[in-house]
Image (cartoon, rainbow, N blue to C red; front, top):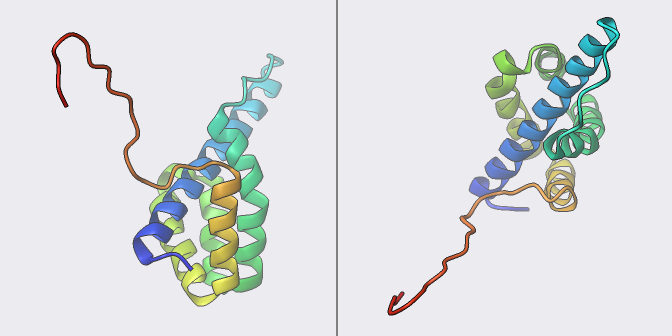
Amino acid sequence: MADPVTITAIITGLVGAFTAYTEYKAAVATAAAKQEPPPTKSAAAAQGEQAAPIIQDGIARHGDAKEQTTLQLFVDDPATYQEAFEKVLARVAERAQPFAQQLQTLAQQANIQIGGVQGTVNVAGQGKI
């Protein structure tokens, strides 16, 4: 199992992707109601589409009634319930180590960034690093 900082970063990334997917589904429904073409799915929404069923199944199997309710509230209104859902997901992952491992594997498979800084430095002329 990952250390608490890493699992928190994993959960934040997964919930962010899940949020993007939930918002994408709402935008698709709105476009359909207006008889407009659906919006393009972002990379984050695609990651969320992959993560959502696994997270929902894990909460259904390992979460209590209140945690399952928080999941549903999050799905209905991610902007309002995102922070609460992150806490719920962390609690469930702490209690159910196999689920926590599944979340870590999911984050790796979905290529969800879990921290760190990446970048490129270009040095020209007499520059030194």
